[in-house]
Amino acid sequence: MIMINGDNIEASELPLKVQLVLDVGGVLLSNLTPTFWTQLVEHTGVEHSLIRSRYKQEIRDDLWSGAIEEPQFWQWMNQYCPSLSEEVGRGMIMDNLVPLASLERLASWQQLADLHILSNHRTEWLAPKLADHAHCFTSITVSSSAGCFKPNLRIYEHAANAIDSARGPILFIDDSPANLKQAESLGWAVLLADPAGEWLDKVEPAMRQLLEGYKAK
Image (tube, rainbow, N blue to C red; front, top):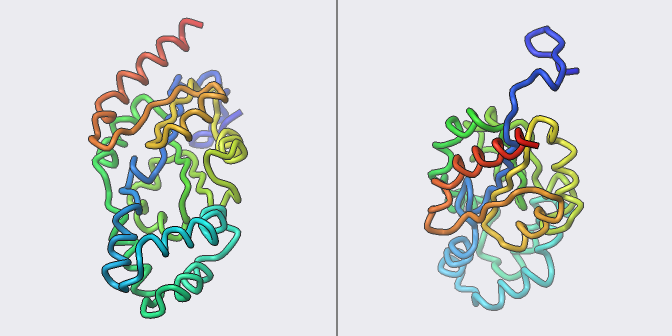
């Protein structure tokens, strides 16, 4: 039973909609890699291969899983980039999270779908960038809050618990084939977000096809 405007409504009475699950990096906002790291190297003079290899070995997993808080990331960064302040570094992060064209299509997609986010990211960085669009999303699952990251199955299950699959089929969009493969194992339909942005014109046809197939069951 769901309450809408004070009235109790059975889930079966709600209109059928695709449950559209969107990644953020490379889908809604630009990816931090490689632009953030390029800018970091230019600003600090640190060797690119050194900082990237250390990052992957020492802190990447803890950063995205939320095992550490953001200040700890900047403390770690200070070991290799002592001239970089947290304020400047965070500014670089924000500057490199650029809104993509997909954000302008959310209102149109909402005609056919309930929208959800499933992202490997930091909530602190995403929240200000998506503030103007947060109202569009039924659920938001971010790795730093969920305690795990894609393609770990656990974060998909975390997101699935926030999705009413009885409302309609699930379509997941991500720019990583590995992340899509894990979603497919759960029975989700998937669409790869290509760098050229050709995927944008495939979303509504894919959703209509999914709805037709769902109704035919």
